[in-house]
Length: 186
Image 1 (cartoon, helix red, strand yellow):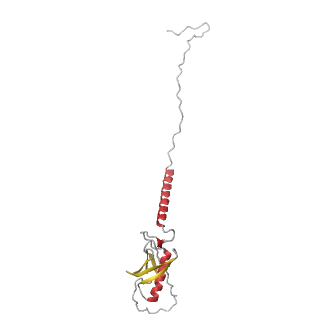
Image 2 (cartoon, helix red, strand yellow):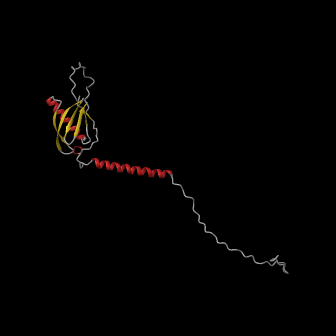
């Protein structure tokens, strides 16, 4: 058996030295497990992207619809329509007033009581709508005519515009200026 030797006189065994083989050790690095992205963070990023897109779209819309140089709607020729309703309140009669017999029925004129006016095109500003309504009422009260021409001031442009007013169904339609249209009715 080759490598075994007998013990020496002191009770020790002689052994052949064992040669340990050297193995190359592989270097291992520890990487902690990757954390998954929080769903709330992704959702927040999506919301922020959508918000930026909406704001950009609003800015583009605003810039393209204000091509009149900030001078208001009378100078633009956009095809969209904005409705502005202006109503005036009738004063209420005091409750203690004696009741009277109803007045005989008067013929109903187009436009009714003329308390409401609205823009028929997007190029018509709200202040201009109210000015047209006031001028038309003054015209109709002074002439008794339903149709006619009125001259109306625009506070937006600082200019006067000629408007042609005619009956249109149950309303009055006034048009002129730079493609401005105003409807007047109940």
